[in-house]
Image (cartoon, rainbow, N blue to C red; front, side):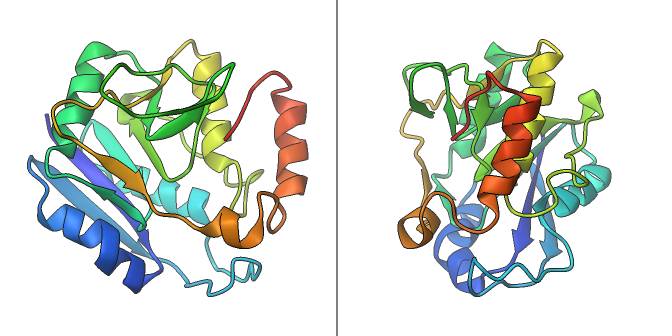
Length: 208
């Protein structure tokens, strides 16, 4: 099974510390898509030519494999990461989206070796999408930094597809090293505006 990994190049120091070394040691067959995106030095400064949903849609158009793994630069994983992704897909071949962490009816659910959790939505730090669904991120409505992945998950859920966390196998370990919330709080930026839009569209859907 061959994959494509896509990421937005914004913070070289994060890439050098987390995603870069992970890719250097990664086992398996994959293509890599890198899109240069303006660096936002302060998360409260929203001057940018393109936001994540637009960049991710460009990656979807560029992808030549069946599955596209979209990751942040502050994600790290062990060399057997793709084996765990393939294992999860083999268990749930008709999935809608797979990711690192999501929210089900009770709590946050992180990828682990016990099982894949079926969740309402996934966090934007990692999402694996299927090309055969021919679905794109809503970069008209969620055209900033918030809830574009959660909206995508809600829409594939409406198609009857499962949204899942990765079922890791062996010694596979995946970690998100973000400090955005701890530095700026859960409602940083224009999050409340996009949250209102999301809740109106999906009143019973929980997000991270």
